[in-house]
Length: 261
Ligand code: FAD
Image (cartoon, rainbow, N blue to C red; front, side, top):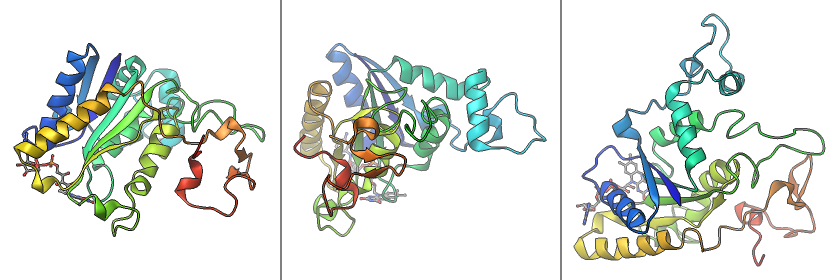
């Protein structure tokens, strides 16, 4: 299999750097092809702007979505964007690896998503009508591929538990797992989160890599998060609300998971 790891940490001699090295070695030893997009090392430009469309009239009003679509369809995207899209096409699985910063991904990684998941590639795919709201949430250009988050957090696991002060980790990661990954079609594996990073030592690092190795070994065999597919019949179209008879009276992120499915 072919794995793309998009890695967002400014320092290779960090815990994330060590975990990245471990993942690359572990996956290669298992026979997989691994590519790493080390965003800081690449000098990745995080800001989506008019320079992303090479044939843009500089006098014209810049429209982030429409210019993205024109550039994608016309083959006039900035080369760095097109290269990352090619890596995604080659990949059977995508791993986004990052330290939790302000309860989300580092800005450089958000900028990778904003620019690489272009209009026509990551969104704006498929028929949009009263009957159908595009190929998204389980369908789209990245369907058939798997994705997983590998995240480190300074906070304790209990801080991110069901009643933890930071909010449940699955809620914090929902916009990334459901919004960024399931939306363009990925099957999303449960995240691998390393908590309380300041307490890392040789023993904990060994236990951490052992656990992470097991997750990598089951990347293709374990079940993904059972997010409900937009076009699978659970949602009323065009309102895009969950049908009343499904999880009646319930609300919040968890209703979008088909528990017991
Ligand atoms: P490092 O700082 O590089 O290392 C952590 C520890 O692991 C160190 O003690 C180091 O010595 C040790 N270590 C490194 N490599 C090895 C190795 N090979 N073997 C054994 N030990 C090793 N945390 C939250 O929980 N929620 C937040 O919202 C949040 N926001 C943040 C925002 C910012 C801007 C910053 C800077 C931090 C934030 N944090 C937050 C904390 C952050 O998530 C952690 O600092 C980060 O995940 C640690 O990862 P690292 O790779 O930077 O670790």
